[in-house]
Structures are given as C-alpha cells and as structure tokens.
Image (cartoon, rainbow, N blue to C red):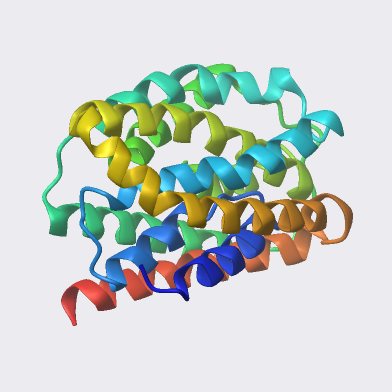
Length: 249
C-alpha cells in the first residue's frame, strides 16, 4: 500500500462528511486508479464508508438533526435490497461504468437545482420514499457505496427537507446500506478474504475515522445549505469524470 493512500483517504473522508456522505465513490476511484484488485475495492470502500458515516450518524441522531419517521421509509426497502445488490457479480468494466454514469447524472442534476427552501406544503409520500430507497439500495449494493450520493439530489428536487437535514439523513442512509452491502459482498467473496481485507483496511479506517469526525462537525455547525449542495455536486462530477477517464482513456 502506498504511504500516501491513508492521507488521501483522510482528506476524502473530511470533505465528504461535510455533506453527509461517506466518500465510498472516491475511495473506489482512488483504488481503481492504483490498480487494486477489483474484488477488494467495494469491500474496502464500504468499510471506510461505515467508519466515516458512523461518526456523522451519531452526531445527527444525538443532535436530532432529522426525524426517524422521515428516514424510516427510505430504509425499509433499501437495506434488504442493498444486501441483494452486494451478491450480484458484475464484470470489471460493467461495474466501473455503472458507478461512473450513475454518479455523473446525479451530480449534474444536483448542480442545476436552483437555490430553494423546503416546500412546507409538500408531504413526504411513504410509497414513493420506499420505492426510492429500494432502488437506490439495490444500485448501491451492486457498486459498493452507501447510496447517499444518489439520494441527496432526489431529496433536493422533491424539497422534502433543507440541506442540513438532507445531509444528516443521507449519512444514516449510507450507514445502514453500507452494512447491508458489505454483508452481501463478504458472502459473495467468502470468509477467506477477511484476513487480507483486515490487513489492508485498518490504516485506512483510522484515517477515515478522524477525517469523518471532523467533517461531520462542519456539516452540523458551520456550512450553509447552499455550500453543502455545491460541494456535493462538484464532488460527484469530479469522481465520475475521473472514473470514466481511467476506464476509457
């Protein structure tokens, strides 16, 4: 492992945690660019995702940054489908292409949303929230990320909450989906990979834990909703572009 990799993971975790994300997409991009084993990439990314958003979710829950009734419909279907997605075997190029295109579309949509406040007349539709959570859970399990990076643009578009609430909800959404997706990935690859994963992931977990805690504090205390959305969109587009360039050029 390159000595620079934990430093890069620390910076990624800190930046992504400011918008309620775990950074799984960028961990994936970094590992792809370093030609790491493809089977190991989603597992390591999910472990680091969990490390980051565990801190953000703890702060969000203890500070009551979102309501459980609001978050539950998204999670009901997403968790089992994230596990199923983790079991699906994808070819290397298919995996990277699916991840990159999904991120690029999500980032562009988020960047084009105009400044707006939550619509107080908009009522969260439980069936729609369950459907969104299920679809994103399946996709997230397949590509090895938590899904918050897909959920955020939809929540901004639907205007069900403000930026800080969306960031907190996405953080918890990523946590539960990453746990389910990781379980699926480990079942798919077998218990024999655990020693290799543990040795590789431990220094990265330490780096992302510190970065995620610092970033989560910025999310809840300092950043405006406008800045949160801008940072989110630019991060998504940057990562998607790097993945496509890495794969096809």
